[in-house]
Every structure is written in structure tokens, then in C-alpha cells.
Image (tube, rainbow, N blue to C red; front, side):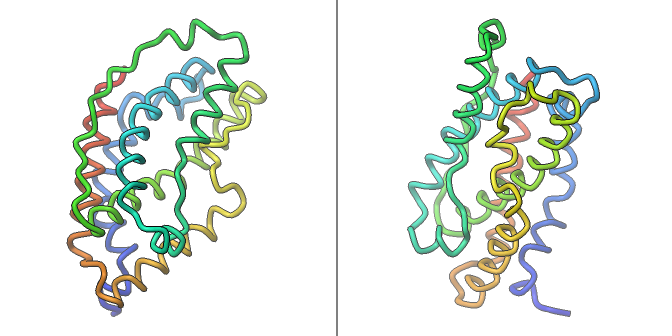
Length: 202
């Protein structure tokens, strides 16, 4: 059996499985994956995520150095999300954008690289799930979905980007820049924060 340092991505997956499943069972997530999902639901989903990603990505990409960002293969997703919202707003749906999003302010504090990577794991994993959501919405909403730049952020490169991210985690562990248990703790903290915020959204 390989050590935890060589299986950090697997350890993260197992450690966060329960909270990840809990998030998937929240009303907002069940609605976006339902067969009766509407374009208004999609817009509301994007608005909620905008409130989540704005402070979180600001904290993450202020803390991360350029070399680590390149090694992990990560980049901000908020610009793509905002572009999708602008696209939807241009489709004569002003009433959709009058909805309020009852989201708390993020409590995430990035103290070190372990917290940083733990949070990035959550967002990169969400990008994998986003592609699944995008496929579902394309089937139900067809052209009303628009470009889905955010949900299908990496497109056909999704698998390759994820493999790069996983490989970089192993390298950073081997260099003793990461402490696996601390990374897992950071991921759980981020998942818990997102759960609490998403649970407030009707």
C-alpha cells in the first residue's frame, strides 16, 4: 500500500465523501439536477455561486504564489461565472435577476499552504461535478443554457487538468511542503463553510 503522501487525492476523496454527499442532497443542488429544472433555477444557482466564489477565490488567489498555481494547474473561475451571468442577463430575463441570495459571508481563513490546497481541492472537485451538471442542463434546457463557461470550465481538458492537480499534490508532499492531515482539515473546513452557506439558499 502506498503512503498517504502518495495518495493524498484519494485520502481527500474518502475524508470528504460524507460532507460532499450532504451538499449534493441540499435543495439547491437537487433542484439544479432535477428533470424539471428551469432557466430561472440555473440563473439563481449562478447568483448563489457568485456570492460564494467572490470572497473565496479572492482569498485563495491572493495567498497562492505563481509557481504553485502553475504546478497545480488552477486558475480563477469567477470570470467565467460572471460571463455566464452577463450572457443570461442579455436574454431578456430581468425578473430572474431580481432574486436575492441569502448567503452568509465566508468564514474561510487561509493561514498556510495546507489550508490553501485544501480549499483548492474543493473548488477543483466542484469543477469536475460542474461538467456533469452542464451535461444535464444541456439535455433539459438546450439552447437556454447558453455557453456554460463556468460549469464546463475545462471542457475536454477536464480529466487532464485533474490529473495534473493530483500529481502536483504528490510532488508537494514529497517536497514536504504539504502536511496531508492539514490539507484534509482545510478541505473539510471549506466543505463545511460551503454547506452552511448553500443550506441557507432556497
